[in-house]
Every structure is written in structure tokens, then in C-alpha cells.
Image (cartoon, rainbow over all chains, first blue to last red; front, side, top):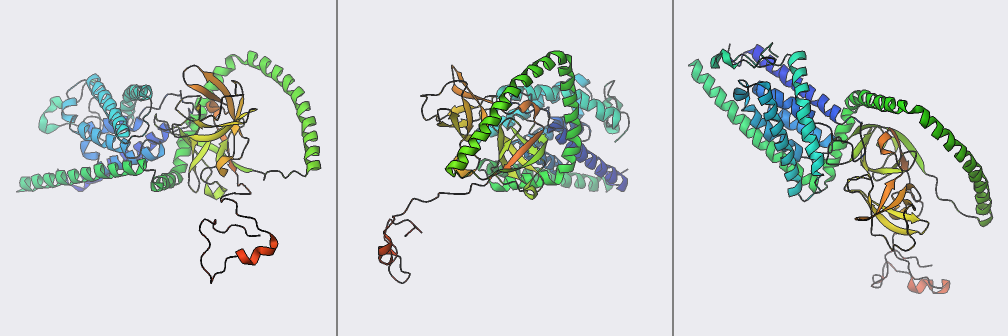
Length: 191
Length: 313
């Protein structure tokens, strides 16, 4: 079936809508009023975790403008320096989109480690952008905790997306059957 | 043929994606510059978005906040007996203070009546529910579910039951953004009691903001009460802010009176100062010489240095 077949387009549009909805829910969870004191730990970046999982498995369903929109909504609602969070998210998602073909052959732990490293890179980009504008950057310890929590939340996000929403690796027939995912997070159904 | 068309389609799709990526990066950079320049457009955009997404934020945030509070309550339940004893002791102490306060209030009212003291205008308030916090490490702020339709204006003071929490930094129709005193960009003019020394409370991301630009350390000691001055006409004077503590490394800091660990409902003070002195005083001339100094619209302009619209009577 051609990629532009109506059913394929419809299912892709549906996936894009689903990603947008999940992204908004992730932002709402991040900003839930559960800690105001300065020593309260920052929330994990659940939006990044969802988009990262999605972009390596469904690179065709992660449009730039959707990622831009979600990043901007998060920047505005969560008081991240507007533009810095969005730009960092767009850049790392563009990187992760190209990593699907490599990660599909690896174990989940390799994927987890890669995504965790990318999360720290994203936070570093945000920090650098804020520092470049001569605005007051946050404490490095707070950013470190945010990175660690984001890394910690990724398996939970992967579990929900894989087993509840059935977003797994696709059969990549053209590349051979060995490119089905590793045990435990193997293909399953299509989104 | 079909294969060639497919390849062309893919390369067009790739090109479109690259163009969109460049646009997204460019717009992000422009937004970052606007944010840094404190553009009001960004704040308007933020509040319009908060207004439109308020139901969703509330629907997801409130159950999570409830669950968190439940967990905290359970932890406190474990030492309930000790807390109960402590609270009973405190009630006994406060009962004694209540009697003292009543007699002082009566005495105060009588003295004010005798002296014809004009009281400051009564400050109204609107109570809101905290529906979101910034969640991230960058800014310390919160969203509350009252806005311009409830009379909230930009800059208003926000208090909880114990003291000042912060100020309004953005107003939407149905939502308001509150900048906490602990945020890096928070600056509030305060006064130390009983010495009356003035200073600026500057947030620095810690639990106890710094007291900067203190007029003089004379008569100021740890434990003193810190309250708002009302300078600038934004905050009402006399709102308790906290208690002064001295640190060996960073001078005086203020332990905040507001309970940030249980910020659920807050009050936004709708305060309007009744008198504003916004120009220097003019020369008061005797009543007889009024025509000589009164400006004549047909004549030459007012003499140099005379304040615009200065009183002439």
C-alpha cells in the first residue's frame, strides 16, 4: 500500500492527534500544584519522555509544528523561559527521529540510556540559552534532579504507551524481520 | 514510474519538513528574545492560553493535588497524638492573647475616635484556588483560578492566612499568574518592625529571601517582624511578610510567614491607595496676588521651572 493511501493518512492524522492530546496531559501533570517550596523537587519532563518514545517509533507522526506547539504551551504554562524549552525540545526530537533504525535492534536498556543522555543534553541546551540571554539561570542541582527524574520516568511512560496504547516497534519489512524490537518491548500492535 | 513519483514525494516531504524546522527554530529564538525583553505580548499570550486551557489544567491538577495532600495527611496522622497535645497548648496560649487583643482593639478604637484619625481605605479581596505551579526549576510561580472578571489587577498582593505569598504577575480573564516571593525576580519593599528600617526583600530561589538595601542595621535584630511598606502604592502597608534571621554568609534573610508547603487557597488583595502624591509641591501664594501669577492662556507660557499644574491658591 502506498504511504499516501487515505487509510494510511487517516491513521497518521489520528496518531498525531493522539500525540498532541498525550502531550497536553503530560504538561498538565507537570504543572499540577503539588510543591511550591523552593526545595520541592522539580517535576520530571513527562512531555519529553512521551515525545522521545514516540519519535523513535513513529518518526513520521511527530510533525515539527506539533512539537513546536507542545513545547511552546509547556514553556508558557510551566514558566520555562519561552522559546528556550521549545527550541531544545525540537532539536533533540529531530535527533531522536533519526535514531529509530539503530535503537530498534538494541535492548530497552540501551534505548533508556540514550534517551536519558538526550534528556540531559536538552536540559543543558535550555540552561545555555538562558545563560546566553543573561537571565538568571536556575540552580544546577535543580536541573540535575529534573534530568534524573525524567530518566526515571521514561520506563513508566514506555510501559503505558506500549501496553496500554499499543505503540510498539513496527515491522520494518524492508529492513528485515530482525528489526522487530527486543523482548519485552517487541512490536505488538500498530497504533 | 510509480517508484519515481514516490521518491519525488519523499524528497518534497523532506524539504517541507526542513523548511518548517527552520521556521520553528527561528520563531523559538524570536520568542526567547521577546521573553528576555519582558515583552507584555508574552504575558498576554501566556494568560490567554491559561484561560483557554483552565478546565484541562484543573481536571488533571486537582486529583493529583488531592492525592499528594492525602499522602501528606497520612504521614502526619502517624504523630497525631503529639500534634493534638501541642495544638491544645497553643489554644490555651491564644485564648489569653485573644482577651488582650480585644481590650487593645477597644482602646485603639476609642483613641482613634478621640483624635479623628482617618483610617486607610478598607482592602477588599478575592479568594482563589491554586490550580497549577510552574513545576520546573526555572521560575517559582503559580496559577490561580481568579482573574480580571473578579477584579484582579496586575501587581496585586497575594496572601494566605499567615502572610504575603507573592504578587500578581499576569492577569487573564479567568486565571492569574502569581510570582512567589522566593522567585529570582521577586522584589518587594519591606519594613522591619519595630525599628522602622526599610529595605527590599529579594527572592533568590531559596526558602528565605534576602533583605537587601537595608537603610541601616541599627536597631535591627534577628526575630524582628518584617512587613510591607506600601511604597509604590501597589501593596497595602502592614502585610506581614515574615521574621528576620541573620546568616553568617549572606546577611539578613526573612523566614516567610506564608505556608508555602500548603498553598491551596490564596487571597488576592484588591487594593487601591486613596491618595497619590505624584508631583512636587508648588508655591503657595497669598490669596490677594492670585491674578498676577495665574497663567493666562493667551499670554506667554508658564515660567521655566514651575511644575505643571502646580496649585496656585
